[in-house]
Amino acid sequence: MILRAGNSQPPVRSGYEAVGFQGNASAKFCRELGRAAMSDTNDADRFAMIANVWNSKAKGLVAEMDLKIERADRKGVKIRMPFNPVFCLDEEETILHGGVLTALLDSAFGLANFLKIDDIQTMATLDLRVDYLRPASSRADVIVLAECFRQTRHIAFGSGKIWFDTDDCKEVARGSATFAITRGKGSLLDTMKTRGPGE
Amino acid sequence: MKLSDMQARCDRVPFFRHLGFSVTEANHTQFLASMPFEQRHIGNPLLGTYHGGIIASFMEAIASLTVLDDLGSPPPKPINLTVDYLRPGLPGTLNTRATVSRKGRRMASVETVAWLEDEGKPVAKGLFHFLLV
Image (tube, rainbow over all chains, first blue to last red; front, side, top):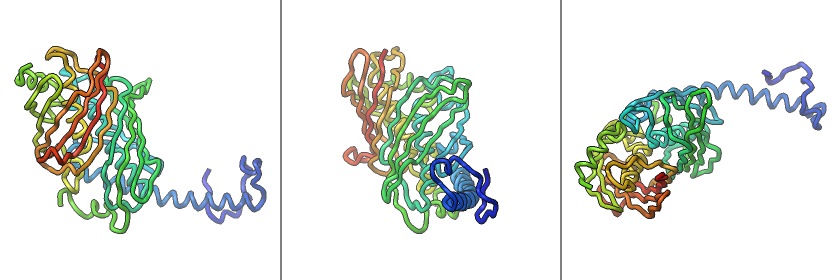
């Protein structure tokens, strides 16, 4: 359903009215939703920009992981990592080393923080906890879903899960992390946009 | 357990080659290893510091070696890990000491510490659980 601010059409009767939103209250609700929808459009551009900056400045391990951002918004990120034999535990190259999944979670949390918090100046991982739910024995792409589920002035809390892109989508790892952040003018993202790696 | 044999075992693991560490000390309950800094280890593109995941992976790798009965043992199954990041992982050779806290018949718990130049100023500490069966 697309709603725009200032919509002159009478509001569509919805479940909200049934639970007590009547008359003006319902119209007000629709206007608010409309404004939210409009700001969503602006946000979409912003999220795309953040994902783009994050991806284009990738260096070292993050570049090596060859990540494809499939979804990036305030609710979190969904990132695909293609199979890479370099990250394997066995000579036959069929099982990923758990450390790669840990690294993937750490990176995904970082991006999720950027999307959720507008004015991050600096960010550092404080701690990271990962549960390996089953062996990562597949050559399928790896999918990670990560979100920043709470932020304060100084701390961001993240949670995420990893599965292989196979028919059964079995979860292979789950992780959580906390980040120390500083917030204010001159965001890290702007710095990333204007400065090349290592400058 | 000879160091050269242990290193040869490590060098057969693709991801361990990617990390590029050398085991410098190995006994029943404690392992020491060092890892020279490489561009591929970078996490923060602006600062050029280690990726937190590389530090965790290095510590996990060394932790997993400490619980092996002998060189022919299959790798232990990692259950979970907790890493405490204490200082920035500045570019430089990273060292790790892994110490077995407890090794039973089915489970093992290993503590690790990683540092750049001064072991008294650790970059990170880790706690790793492994399933041995």
